[in-house]
Each structure stands twice: as structure tokens, then as C-alpha cells.
Length: 155
Image (tube, rainbow, N blue to C red; front, side, top):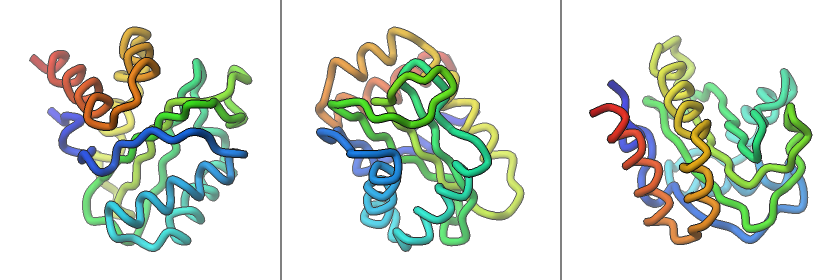
């Protein structure tokens, strides 16, 4: 059973004031990925933008789950970004996004990519989890909310 702690490390969780656009948000996430996971931010941005070109990863209710397969990672890794001020993400429900969980997966066809996507999706589908995430801006608290929820569901 995959847990949030398997894919998300403390340094990968942050709260930022805002982003001027979806593109700028993806750039910010790519730069963050570079500092946390030692990957090339341009490659991350290209991979995420390519995935977005296939259809938005804005799943609704203020949540987006951008994800891409990526040469430079050998296991699936995640980044969580909470925005103080929501940004338009071309979401299915037309709502701006303030909770963004990014997944970077190895290119090799691996079922962990789908497991991680399902885990994140299940977690962020819970209204109380999203409310707690929106109410807190401290990265350690955000990490605890995300990891405790999945740990309690696994029990």
C-alpha cells in the first residue's frame, strides 16, 4: 500500500502567495522540483506543459494534480503547493486553483504512477482535508495533514 510519505518529502511542501498565471505557477513548481529533487527545471516544465496540452489537470474544487513522466527521476516523487491567492488553471469546473499536488514519475511504465495519482486524488477529494490545507500555511502542518490522512485511511 502506497502512503503519501513514500512520495512526498518535507522540503517538497510549501505555501506561496500567488502566481500570475498557470504557466508561471508551473514554472514555480518546476524550479521548486529542481531544488528539492535535483532535476532540470526546464525539463520538468516542458513535461508538465506537454501533459497540460493533452487536457487540464485541474480536477475541480480548487484542486489541480499536474503530473508527468520524466527521465530524471527513478521513483515517483511529489510536490505540494498551496496558494494564498487562487490562480486560473483551466479547471474542468472553471474554478481557480489553490491546492496543487504535482507528481513526477519515471518514464518506465510502472504501476506506481497510477497508484500515486489515485492516492493523491482520493486524498484531495475529501472536503475536510482540503479545508485544513486551506486553513494552514505552515509547510510542516500541510505535510502532516496530507500524510496523516493517508495513514489513517490505510489503517
